Length: 222
Image 1 (cartoon, rainbow, N blue to C red):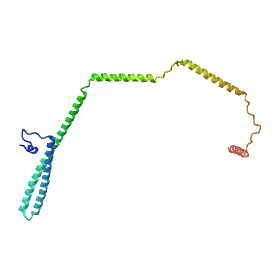
Image 2 (tube, rainbow, N blue to C red; image 1 turned 120 degrees about the vertical axis):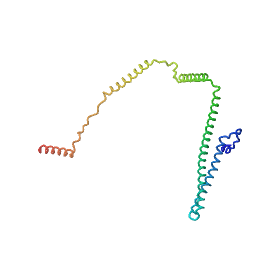
Image 3 (tube, rainbow, N blue to C red; image 1 turned 90 degrees about the vertical axis):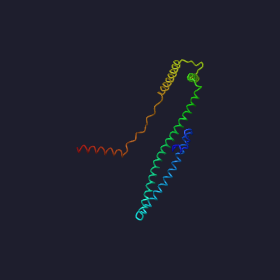
Image 4 (cartoon, rainbow, N blue to C red; image 1 turned 135 degrees about the vertical axis):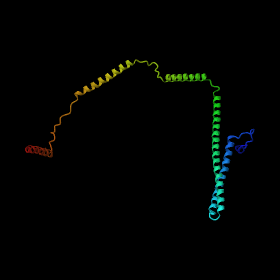
C-alpha cells in the first residue's frame, strides 16, 4: 500500500475511494502534524547549537557530537519543509477540484430546472400569445383615444361663419370707440392763467451776470 493510501485509509483495489472533503481533511491533519514536528526539530537544533558552543573549548568531542545531531535535525527539517510544500499544493488542488465539482453540480441542477420549466412551452404558442397581447394593447389604445375625443352633439358649426361674426363684433366695438373720441371735441379747454409768470430770482440773475462777465473777460484776453 502506498504512503497516501495509508494516509487516506485506502483498503486496496476494492476499497472505496475517499471523497474530496475527506482527503482535504486528512491533508490538513497531516500538515498540523508536520508543523508540530518542525517546531520540535527547531527546538532540538537550538539546543544542540548551545551544547556545541558550551563544549567548544572544554570538550571538543561532545561539541562535535552536538553539531552532528544538529546537522541530522536540520536535514529532517528540510525534508519536512519539502513535504509540507507538496501536501499544501495537493490540498489546494483538491479544494479547487471540489469547488469545480460543486459548481458543475449546481449548474447541472439549474439546467435541469430550466428544462423542466420549458417542457410545456411551445414557441409557436408563445408567438401567438405575444401577437394577441399586441393586438389587445392596440385595441385598448384605440378605445382610449375614442373615449378621450371631445364629442359635440348638434354643435356642427362653420368655423368661417364664426370668424366673420367675430370680425363684425370687433368692428362695431371699434366704431363705438371712435364715436366716443369724436364727442370729446366740444369739451372746453382749460383757461390760461391770468397771473404773471414768476420772475427770475435775484440769485439766478447774479449767476447769469457773472457768466456774461467771464465770457467778456475771455474774449478780451484772446
